View 1 (spheres, helix red, strand yellow):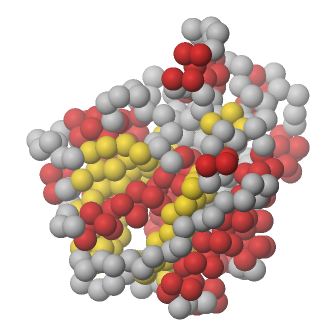
View 2: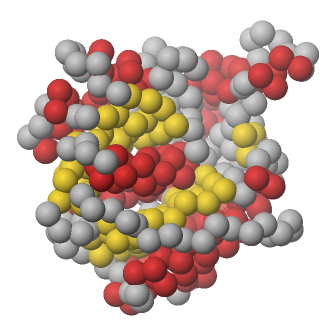
Length: 346
């Protein structure tokens, strides 16, 4: 890093009531958008071949203009509940890691309860750590289980394409990157220890490197009321996101292994955010992890923000590659400003 920062020490997970992953669920918009679709629609000087070569992406899912976030959330949650044979009324808490909600306030996590017909005012709230958000929600979830909750519902992802589609003038440097997706997970009580270690960090020096300008900052600027660019992700230094992903992967992996006493060779699967194929490959190379022990879905889903890592986890589970008892290291990096990692037995 260009600016020195002292990262927090990892602390043992002092948990008495253990948690486990009960189920996951996903929701993807039906509409598939290819690189050529974007090139043609927005008159961008690029070729599909060049985009695939530089980013490693072929297509992504974009929601329809009128599709609400709570509808996508409800679809993922319903699949998750069905797989677990549980009802929304059995959830003690709902945490949604989002990029943008249908509203800034109230929390989208509250709206999904209405969408699902919940009869109980279940505690529900949103968090916004970007791509690292789902891991941070998992960290919070296992602590809520320890404090007495029986089931915690986690949701991550959202609709990133809305401003691009409405404004019609996307940033050619980032328009190919983002896709829409939603993931849900239910955490429940376990009779055995499954979550072994957790580590979360932030780097305030990178606070403004990658951001969505919408917020009180726009009140200090002369912006057109129809300027939807304030809802788009702005990246000051893409190379810094690559560098921070590599640095954090090494730092978090070292801490998790020291805390648990395991080695990388003992890990069955390594899951991490794949903001691009290059970023995913760079993390594997830095840690000397064989590709067959990991997975990237960037080529067909793009950067789905907080949904990236759990989408991969869901894919591994429901294709049969990941078995109960397998040891997983799961990481996520949030635009350089935050990062998180966990080790657990599925």
